Length: 296
Image 1 (cartoon, rainbow, N blue to C red):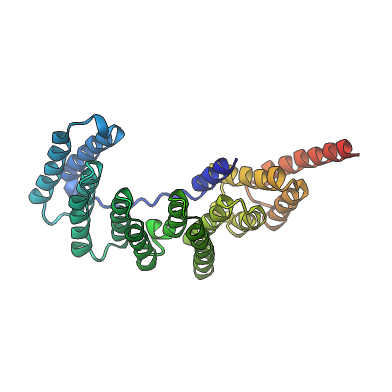
Image 2: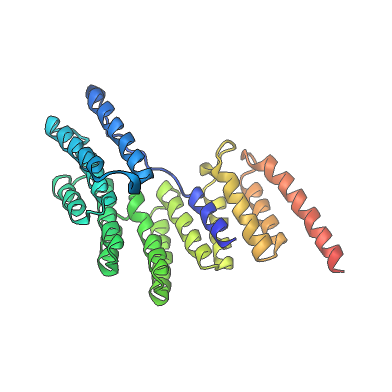
């Protein structure tokens, strides 16, 4: 159940940051880059069965693309992909050399730099160098806290410590993550970044099976961001389902779920969720009545 809850929240906060790197005048370059990325994905799906020559050939093709288009806005992304090819080959030194080139050449691209630092950390992680990996993750967080990569670093770091069986450090990291996300939420209220921060904070609590605190944050996610929830948005039902699982299954408090949904309807009577929540409230009340009958 813990994994289910955490995965649900990752779906909820999976607000994908789509960056527009492409210019219509670079159509042929875009097309070449797309095909290279397609080949990369093919290798990444089964790297062990791919000959080393295929990786090297793909890396050379990225080099050729940069040589042919030295001034393209896609340069950083092309180099990043090249570095990922080396990571797949487990040639982490060459991967870091490519990533560090990005940090030198594309200093103004915060999202790209945050992702690059994360990938450098991943190379150290693959080598078992925990301190260096964490250092890169913390740098990405501190320098670029409001990028998609930067904002996920506190939770990722805590998860990493946990995977490495470093319990005490993991607990400290989770506590820091909760504080970090609260700070971001307060700094950027009623914004997409604030919404993401609350989502990561809820996930931090869920990962630790801290049900009361996680439900408090889930309630804020629902009530504080009505515009984020649309009838056609699959993230809304995921949030509702997660609230139900925490309140009803974990805390055995059906009334709490009902109160949360009533509060939402009272505050936003014209919201597209109203009809569905009305039906859910009736269902939960019926469930609660049956539970009381069974108890008596």
